[in-house]
Length: 68
Image 1 (cartoon, one colour):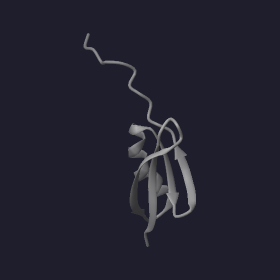
Image 2: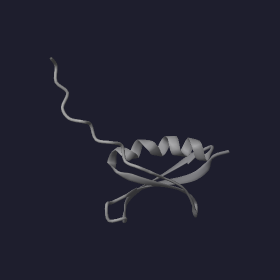
Image 3: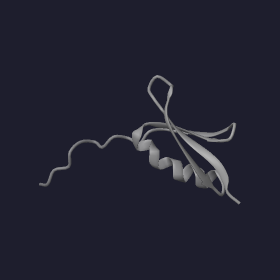
Image 4: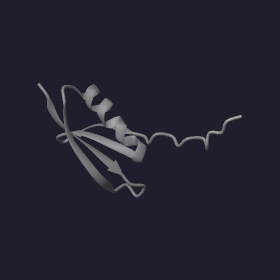
């Protein structure tokens, strides 16, 4: 049985910028799915009125890759 979740992209000012609704069979599956949005910033994952987690943004690449 799947449950309804939402992943909210949180701006630097703490205000939700966007949301993505999705279904997942468990909290851990929901977190795995929501982790893809961290490339855009901090993400809060909710299941109805229950906050599951706050996922930190992915670190930026260290710089351009160069061939030597």
